[in-house]
Structures are given as C-alpha cells and as structure tokens.
Length: 85
Image (cartoon, rainbow, N blue to C red; front, top):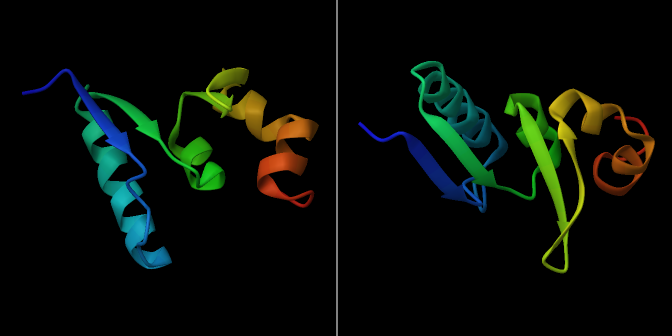
C-alpha cells in the first residue's frame, strides 16, 4: 500500500493505444489516494492527467503551475504542445 508511485518515462516506446490505457490505469490508481510523480516527455497526455506540472530544461525548473495553467500558457503551448493545442 504505497503512498506514492514514482514513474520515469512510463510511455517510452509504447504504442499510442497502450499509452492511453497506461494513463487511464494511472488515473484509477490516483483515485485510490496514491500520489503519482511522473517524469514524462509526452506533455499533452501528462497534463491531461496531472494536477500540477513542472517544466525542466537542463536540470532546472523553468516553469510550473497547475495543469490547466500550463496547458493554457502560450509559451508552453508553442514549445511543447504545438501552436494548435
């Protein structure tokens, strides 16, 4: 019965349908009260499932906020989500 689950790039190398299944399973785990800390380059799906996000560049935090704030931040959209996110 862990308090937290730490994951490093859980979607790396997975087919898109499997990535969706994985994040749906993680959402169910989160609903049980287990905290999740996920390091992930798939920003779009990560923010869709996150409460908060931190942007790292060269080992430094360059941005942070709620998932909604980051999804709506123009600089984040251009850099990580494409301009039509």
